[in-house]
Image (cartoon, rainbow, N blue to C red; front, side, top):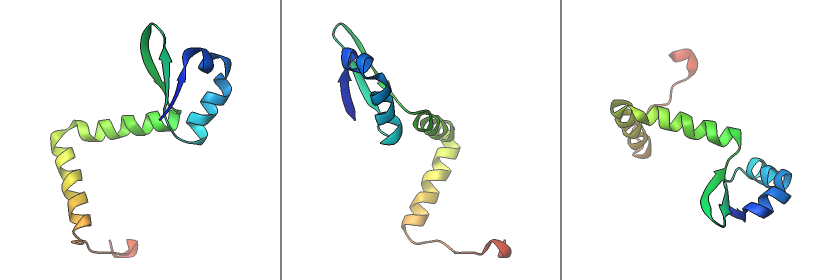
Amino acid sequence: MKTVNYSEARQNLTSVMNDAIDDRIPVLITRQNGIPCVLLSLDEYQSLEETAHLLRSPANARHLLDSIDELNSGNTVIKKIDDI
């Protein structure tokens, strides 16, 4: 995560935004007397929101984690789309 202070972010806003977008990294913006915030690209934000939505339901989260475990254990079957 890149970190910049408020003054640097304000003076170089376009560059800071481009870093968040082009490098797909969050940018932590610190403030001298305030709570810091994080700048994300819209794509990164939407990705985080989608992940949170999918994991919000305990049953769905368990199903997704079980599927990942199954894939990692090699317990999968490859099918062609025409066979489905």
